[in-house]
Amino acid sequence: MGKKYVTQPIEVSLSWTEEDAPSGLVESCVIEYRKPNGTTGSWPAVYDEQNRTIYYVGGPGSSYGMNGKWIFWPVVTLTGGESYPGEPISETIYNKGE
Image 1 (cartoon, rainbow, N blue to C red):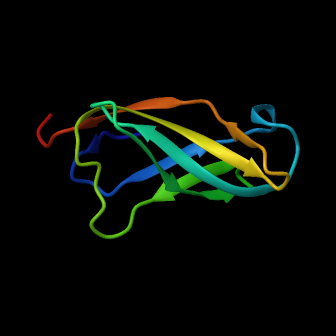
Image 2 (image 1 turned 60 degrees about the horizontal axis):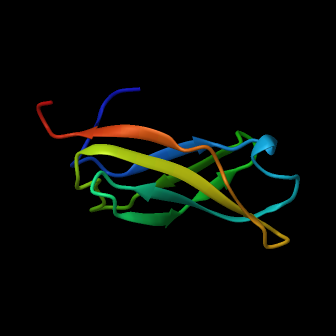
């Protein structure tokens, strides 16, 4: 995977396995994040059941906007209402020329 830069559109893809939560139908999911400055938030995500992947792709005008170490993790809500976080990953976002 190549480097990601501050000005690029946001694109995050995370894996999700049955080990991350009990069996059940996925009702909704989000990708939560922590920016390098400690600010947290989330984006609505899509669950690709066949590939067991949760992803978010920002629309036009979206960008990371901040360089440094970002942390991302999925949170999946099953049809029973229970929410389960997945394993976090960290990714360094670079300024142009780095």
